Image (cartoon, rainbow, N blue to C red):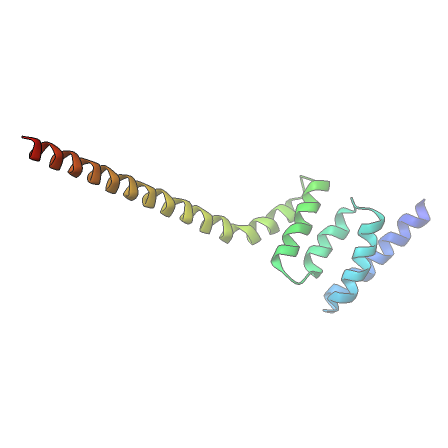
Length: 124
């Protein structure tokens, strides 16, 4: 058991070295193997988040780090930096939807009010 753990750590270090050398495809291959062997290998997920090609993939990897260890502040900070602009944009969209819906309700209230005013002005 100790030998297999040491061997996994050696492969993780090899993958980290590959990431640092900008050989990300090779690093992903090693990290993917490590993750397949142990889906809860926190360090492998964390380094996979650096080795992948897109922010979406990185976000998924960081979610897995936090699944394994909710207290991992590195992963939480990185995930916040990735999703922060997205969250701000969604907040702005929600505010715009609110104002759009408010304007639409005001318009319909005005239309109904005008219809009633016309109806009662002709009835008199």
